[in-house]
Image (tube, rainbow, N blue to C red; front, side):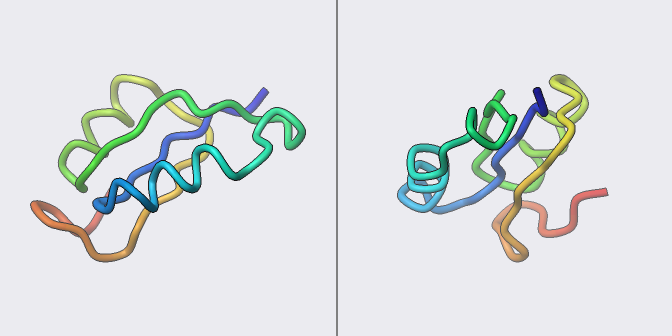
Length: 65
């Protein structure tokens, strides 16, 4: 099963993605969420997800590396 991290600054969109996509049917599970790019980088290092779904422009840090 692929591990997915959601990085999105708007909570309603982040929750919408989390709960509207049939993750298990796609062979995935959401392992975490982050509300900005800096928190996203920390979560990537901590959780080591296979897939990161992210917004392009966010507060604090825009570019994930």
